[in-house]
Image 1 (spheres, rainbow, N blue to C red):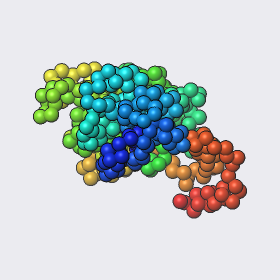
Image 2: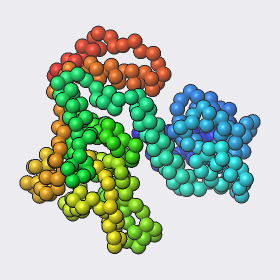
Image 3: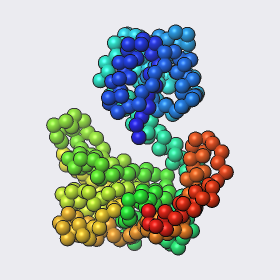
Image 4: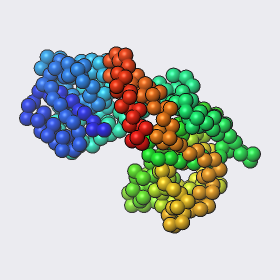
Amino acid sequence: MIPSVLIIEDERILSEAMRDYLAGKGYEPAGAASGESGLRLLRESEMDLVVLDYQLPGMDGLETLRQIKQAAPLAEVVMVTAHGSVKVAVEAMRAGAFDYLTKPVDLEELTVVLDKAWHHARLQRELRYWQGVRREGDPLSRLIGESEATRLLREQVVRLASAHREQGGAPPILITGETGTGKGLVARVIHDLSSRAERPFVELNCAAIPPALLESEIFGYERGAFTDARGAKPGLFEAADGGSFFLDEIGAMSPELQVKLLKVIEEQSVRRLGGLRSKGVDVRILAATNKDLEQAIGAGEFRADLYDRLREAVLELAPLRHRREDVLALTGYFMRLHARRHRVRVRGFAPEALAKVLRRKLEGH
């Protein structure tokens, strides 16, 4: 997703410079020369981020900030103040600004701050989404469809959510299936149905992080563990303590890191990079893959002993082309979801549109 950023700045040259620079950094910028025109833009189209100057004609930056927080509470605002305006910066932070910069604006610094603001905005949106999902009631309602495969999946999910080993602890679950079958959704439903529902649900896509960084993300590190380790950092296992840790695309994990993961599963403890002592953790591991792990074992890409540990419980998700009875239910669900999201009224699909959807699924698309 390309983040949109609204720049409310009356200095035309500075505004254009910020817009040009941010466009080159992967943002979608828009401009407004006053607080009033900026608010109109915000009400007409949703913006992810706002860069807001304090000195504006008409309504000043602080009042504009307060009204932005009412009109678009999820938009993160970076305030721009004159050099040394500490009092203004403090008031802006109290009014809900994410951060502030002083003039003259360093465009590289602006990008760093906006990157952080965008990361925070995405986390807040995800939190609101899951809070809303939890309020909607039964987590099983998220597994949509009445095909035999979907009914069986719901039964398996309920059983596995409450499963415990005799010696204590919840067994790992391996979720397999093609891309787009809903592996991440199923992992979240299992967590929300379990006794760990009020504890953290931490997820990581093993294919999305460079192998050199993956180990420190998972296990954390102590100060001085490597060149840039200026302070200690807990890993995701520690963050997930008491809850669930979802490792997506686990087949992309290096064999060296697989050894360490196996050790955590067996000993229920984790040691940070550069650390001398292990720390006990109570984490349920949910792993997902679209790869054939048995084939990967034969190719020397995946460890057989880790595979044996992970497959204490296996959920295999069927693609939609194998559960065609779910097509109409899913079509209706997404229609209602996007109607709510875009605040439009939709009565339903035209018969010819539904026929086309069904025809495409019957053809295996």
